[in-house]
Amino acid sequence: MPLYEYKCAACGHEFEELKSKPEGSETTPCKQCGADAPKKISQFSAVIAGGSPTETLDMTVGREADKRWKMYGDRQSKRRKGQEPQVMTDLPKTKDGKFMPVMGLGNEKERGTRTEYSTALQGHLQTLAKRGQPQVEGPGAF
Image 1 (tube, helix red, strand yellow):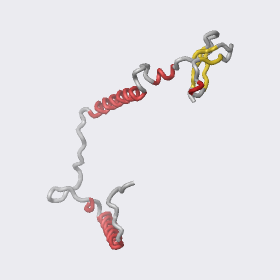
Image 2 (cartoon, helix red, strand yellow):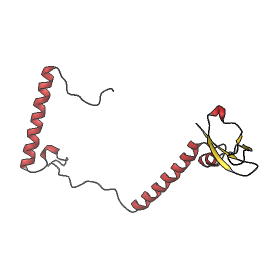
Image 3 (spheres, helix red, strand yellow):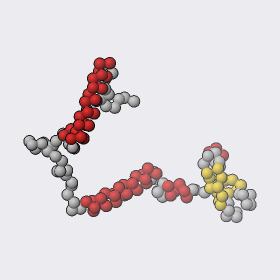
């Protein structure tokens, strides 16, 4: 139910009433003096809509969001000014200059554990394939 605002022409009393749309008449009896009080144009709706009758709420919110994203971008560019992008050059490489695969990284114990897990996973996948239960390659349909 919409909230209607009324202002009594006789005594100046302002009040609000919840009424269903068919009941939301242009006038209603004043709560103080009983005279007919005409319906006011809500100030709340004018503020929400940006104060312009041709501007929608989406336009107002969109404009505000654009301003805030621009301010965010300006701050980020000021922070980055003079900084070069960081490149990870300290990763280990093989003798031919290529980056070393993950399986070769770490100490001997870590490499052994990684190899053990990889072997167990390969065995599991082979068992699933024998049963006719293929491993899921990626996200399926919902």
